[in-house]
Image (cartoon, rainbow, N blue to C red):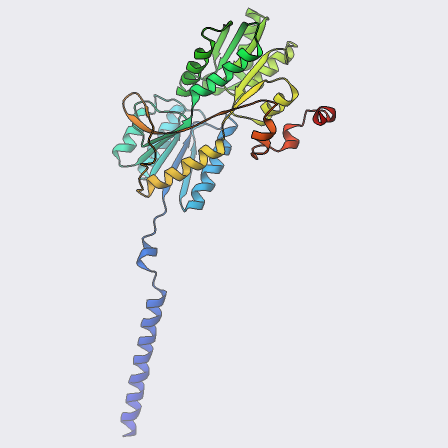
Length: 352
């Protein structure tokens, strides 16, 4: 009898242990929905970081995507178009969920972007339209408006009319053509005349210095200069300074770079067409996430013609920033600190 009692006890203990182990395994096993949680994989390709703003765009995009639960693989082509094509090919091989591209050449990337679509990967063109690529979404600012704002500044500040220069970005950037369209729309019928113009290949600012010097050899009686962005304006300002013309020539740019804001407050640049890169990058990341998760973007009702396809288009509006609204737009908006913007302004001028 004792023998059977011992055997029974042993069996009960063993069963209890097995049941306990089963219970533990059931508790520790991850839920099916946790196992299936998707982490979107986003490929983000930059033409280069030559322009100051792109580093800020990158940081905001990556941090926004991380907060949403996605991962971003950032590639920088350093201005090499073939390298950018190779990097996008790499994203295709890695089977990214979405590929986001800041194009260096808006026509050369068409083939590889179509290849991505054929592979079932969603594509988003950022700030610069890639021609005939049929992207799933394009996000940018109204670049014709950028051109209009810069040209209107010259018309307003040079009522007597005269010669002006255009120091523009590269012809391979589709935005440059759109900006020029906006400029021409304002200048047509005005008493301002384009006496000299040039395009800076690869957005290399050093070229702007060379070009403004060439323009000044043609005529020193220049009244205003429209620059493709604030980076180019910095080099144009350097050339004007050497000729003792800084502050005498109405200078405009775009992007709201810190040095441009400093020049505006110091009186050596009239305005910058400010584009909130942080807003653009944040919105782009949010929509890239939605595309990766298979969510619809039916709320995007506007389209833009890329040459072949009508592409869903998120259009943002630039704001003209001058000395009068610098505090309201740039400083209150947290884009640059007041002490930095006012760095070259005297205490007396600050009080005024």
